Image (tube, rainbow over all chains, first blue to last red; front, side, top):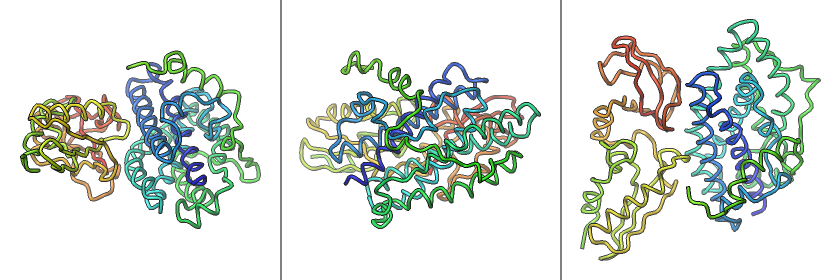
Length: 249
Length: 161
């Protein structure tokens, strides 16, 4: 089951880390509704990661809280995109858009997975992510075409996030096995669908995808290689648990 | 010994912790009941959202109610086997939401579109001259809206597939 575990780990870690980043907007959102939106998405994503950690637990891994809070940064399988600091609201919005479209498509594909426990959870998660994608589409379209400054900021953020976003689709050593067993259609298929889906939204916002010859996916996250930003995030996220693992909330 | 039907009836008084006018049964989050013996009743629940923070609390509320009814060892578990969607709310449940000042979710056909979220009827005056302010509200299951007719902000219980 190593192939299934690897798949679950990378998805659960993406959700946990982006969920933590989203929660950093709590109390700091540019307007109240956005504060609430990012906080709500944080809650959704951390809940979704817990559901996936629970599937891992059923496959013999440790309890969800233990897995989430006791590993070191180099034991996380998330892509580097999700660990980058929030930056300004424009960067957070672009990252949210690039990541959430990919994730919604991923869970739509997995809703038909031959691994039934994952298919069940995916059917639930894909419905929840729909709202995340609505939110992302709304703000990318609005800010991409509002003022000269908002447009320029969104374009700069898109350029900065792009190669990291391509890193979402880093393939695993189990890719062929996952595909042949019909567990997951694979990262390449997902990436193709993602490009098709984001293009019209970005076009509507007059935002340009960097030229293909400049694409250099930031890989390594899935194998535990991370930017310097993940370590302090994990430290902060796990602080309470490490002081008192049995703390009641 | 209780029948399955009796248990559904017994659980009707267990309310949603966030919407005290609505029972968990009407909410559609109790998905299976099996009476396995005199003191042995098995109940399956499913959360509205996977990040719902109230799910443990709701499991306990259901178990407490069953113990109150004299069932000494109820078993209550949460699963995603039959995931919740907003069409599972009963007619009475939809009325309860409205009474609580929340616009009930429209019936969907398995697909949530952005159009479905626009012009939600205002639960106070019934007007559809309303705007969606945000797909995220004070809890995961609610969105924020504004009625241009009676000039009031209101919330909707979101449609979910």
